[in-house]
Image (cartoon, rainbow, N blue to C red; front, side, top):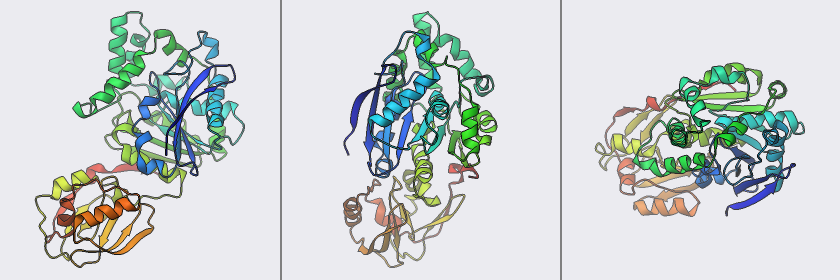
Length: 408
């Protein structure tokens, strides 16, 4: 599963940098970054084993961004040209009927596609904290943070322009700390590559949203993901003005999610995306984060009678530790049969049975088996038998992890 990088040529001769990786037999998702970013914004998704095993990912730098061309004239940044860039990337990787996933400004590309590409060119649209189109909606959609940044991104004052780019990136990540500092610097570096003219060109094209709305009324599928703690966009506006036109849609609001939703809530975004583009369905309790589960229970478990176990309550289900255990990346879960050190079944994320009657007498045996079937067990191995053999009953409420889902 090696990454392919290439330059493709758009209809006006502009060179577009693009990369692809994943399952060539799966559906294709084309990832489109936001203002001032580049393909690097999706580095974590390009290394997500659960995602890559099911789909083929393509990402590209929009014109004036990253390693793509940067034409000098504003007329080169037209809606037909942005649609042509998208088609050049899709055809350059020999893919058909992809899904377009647009983050932030990248969401506008779906409007270009619906307006200028052949009917049925894409299988669906995935908005992630997205601006659906360039136009009047921006006045209502943008929060004060973004409106205050806009003139500073266009200033000729080099010092303030750089500070504005740093502030812009910081407003996309709600929990910026030492663990993601390298990513922050990478994102700031990508934005620093753009001058004021590049920023203006990226946001200047005229778009007519009616072809987008018509596609939605005609049945084009939409997955709209956003967080309720987005510092840049009031995503309820996009839902009210755009998503309402789609008769075949799902809207998911993630509690605590900021603008870079795919980054801070990668696991949940991946689950929703996979459920949307494939028949893959993640069971509700697979959303529990393993490390939090250990944090809540590690000091309360001792090996013993497996018929009594901890219960972890989520909004949709109750887990019984000793009856069900999940892996940190939600790629597999094990179900003991009630007898100490015997695992009756192991299931993959799609619900298919992997193996019966696997002995877990040594936790390394479980780990090795999961690796052998292509899954990863990332939890500390020493915790596995403890959680399988917990003797007492306790309740831990993880309801803070819930998201609000609106019907398809």
